[in-house]
Length: 434
Image (cartoon, rainbow, N blue to C red):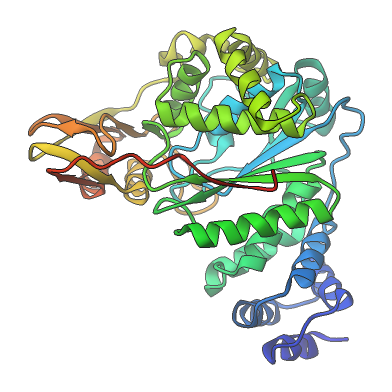
């Protein structure tokens, strides 16, 4: 067996065996397969595709290429949640405390931002003192003690995925369903939870631009999870416009806290309650999704979810005073309001362009290890369907003075204002696996 033959086989439309896939994955981790051969195979996969069995085997091989977390000492059904990424998606900070308040152990490994999609770890680090670098023993102890912990993903989880993704990123082979699915699920399966909830975003600010693509990915993710022995379900949610009103790290923490207080925007509240309800159902604390949603709503109404968030922050060394005083997270150097240039209604609001505006403000990353401005971002005043008047504020951008003009220009491009009222889209598009 050698890489030349494997590349040739897939190039010609052949089906790779489990042994050939394992040979490829073990070789790239060991460094015995050069980048040019790995890239050639990825390009062959991109054009010839993989069938489901190949995709499942690739996922398992990638899962087994690094450490696999053992969470067995944590009592209860551990439920993990993954979002495919979007603009203003701060749901982890909301739904994890809601699920934990219902008795679901939430042991979550999360990532940092790359591009304009927000990273949960960056957001949490906007809270003074909050630690995301945890030893596995402390991570598990916090889950046992408080029912919730979030840590940065370790370098030893799904090692092959990091190598493969870096190659896909520079060889134009990102947009392949099997490669996307195996990347997501290898990390989720290695993270050790018993059940997995997937939030697959769909729209201009998401990787999946249309519902058909999103549904295809969701079905594949759910099937892989179930075949790997995990209770798995997926929600397809809308990302045509940003989720909530805040886009940027500290801004999103504040909005997450407001939502836990019952004061959040309608869309982020609706999605968060739905996702938390599904986690509660997956974790066996509700007999149906509907009952799970009711329990999630009650956790906000009773204050239990907010109290769990406080325990979560304090457990990881954070300043819980941010719950009542957002200024403890600091303030941006400057701000600039973006004004409407005409009367009318917001007919559309591009999530992608708002995401780019946030990136330009300094809230995101253009390369993996670049620093972010935790106080930068965009705060939306108007969204699709809202009435606006000439000179009224559409949004405000925050960040360094030198970056605000470019960010504001992108915000202007994001808004379309017309005479007709545009009906709002449902935040929940479809569900898979329920």
